[in-house]
Image 1 (cartoon, rainbow, N blue to C red):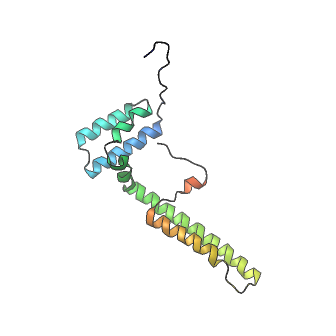
Image 2: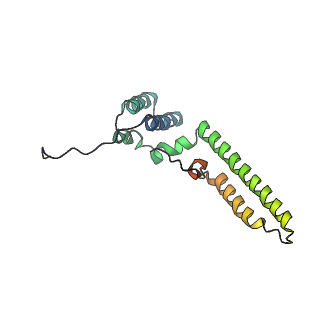
Image 3: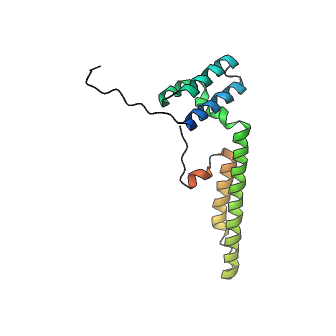
Length: 144
């Protein structure tokens, strides 16, 4: 390395990023992918890390970076259930509004069936794949 070159910029990690990796490691320990000793060593490394590039090797050898195990924790399942309930409530409110508009319009064809069909398909996909995230609809983004 040339002494006049600046070292590569490293990005500092946040508490939220360290905690997310720690949750992944705890989930991997509960699945039996990491034994207690190795899990505790990795947790200590996660909490001691200062830079993002120090976190990646801690979960790199886990399937899907450990995110699949994280999705099956009781907390993640409860969050998915709450998200589904919120999504279904939103659809019911929209259905009520559209039905009210249909009644006021005196139309013979039940036109709210068209948008409601697409909303229900979205709800079914949400229930099946769990990919809908309410927080993404209001402009929030996840870490890592």
